Image (cartoon, rainbow, N blue to C red; front, side, top):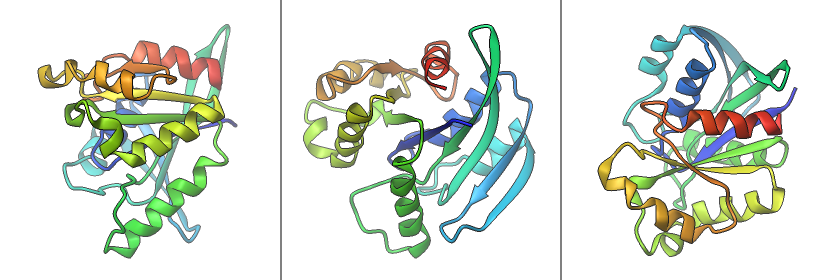
Length: 200
């Protein structure tokens, strides 16, 4: 089964995107498999609304380990299952919490083995100097454009303050396929689905 992973900075909207994308594909209840750094796995069953209440939030590093779900999507005339994996947000700083440090290492390690990368960037924090100030996003972009199995999602496009920043994102990462989305309102998901469908 092919695996698609979601990467980005903490609080860029990765988990909300994952859950609302599952909802966009018609999922009402979901089994989420949690994989910690030591390889321990456990699975929990949620309604989509329960998952959003428990797994999403404004706290930095709310997600500290891999969280995977199996989704089904039509690709052409057939329906295929694929694994969508949410990850711990990555930042430049060495975090003082060992659990977060291990989560970041786990995210970076998984990059080498997945089939497709969805890189989520918060459009509301972008400015003209974006490329210089956010080396983690730059490194993810550099890795992704080499792997060829990479899509850049400009999240929070629903915010009026973020709309003008889309051009800065495209200018900073000119070789990426960029799709503006709103993880909160499921905007841009049709385009994301089409791109994911071509890669799973």
